[in-house]
Structures are given as C-alpha cells and as structure tokens.
Figure (tube, rainbow, N blue to C red):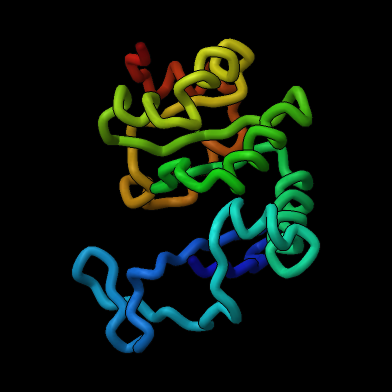
Length: 170
C-alpha cells in the first residue's frame, strides 16, 4: 500500500492508497469518478510484518510519524477506514489510551453490527465506548457537505454527538 503524509489547514492527513490503484495515474478512479492521484507517494509498504522486520528503517519511520502527528490532536475523525491495518490499529489503540480527552468520531452509515465485529473493535468497543473515547455517526463524509456539518463532530463531547446522531449499538 502507499502512504502519503501532508498537512492542510493545520490538520495532519495520512492517506493510505491501495495497490488496486492504477500505476497510470490518468486511469485512477473512485466509485466511477476519475481522481487525480498526484502527488504520487514515494514508496510502497506493507503492514506490520514489514514493520517487525524493518522497524528501524522506512517502515518504522512511517509509523513513528503517524504516532507523532496523531499525538498532537485530541480528536480523530474516521471515514471509510475498515480498521484492517494492524500497524495503524496499534497506533490508534495507543492514541485512544494516551489522553483522557482523546475521542475518535467514526463516520459509518453502513451496517454497525458488521463494523463492530471487525477484529479491531470486537474486544475494544465496549471499553472505549463506556469511557467516551469513540462514537459512531450514521453518516458518510459525503453526507456532511459544509464546515457547519463537520464542526460539531470536532468540538462537541461524545455524549452530545450521540444525542445529535443516535445509533443503536449492540
């Protein structure tokens, strides 16, 4: 997979692009719409197997940067992430436990039961939810069209977000 780190409007963005992307950037598309895949990341990486073998080289640096960038923020807004990357999941788990006020807001208008049965959330959801560390908003990022739609997710406490966007969680 490809990684690209960038800072835009004071927020850190970590973009993970999958090998399914065409190598010819003029052929890249997402849901049938052409996308500009530039700037291209400089290297390809795998997940934790490569990190364990090469933890002090490029792979280790990627995860160290992700850890450092995320530690500067008290809230992470997730949209479209499957929680299937063990290396990133380890850092997200660490981040959720680092500071009492850290909160992950997960945009997911899909099947909540299926989402929560993922390997990452299966044993963690109840604990993190009880500590107000995670909240699901039943929308996709595309459903939030203005800054006024997104701003409450970045500032309100978990309990207030749950009140505004009720979700039945088993």
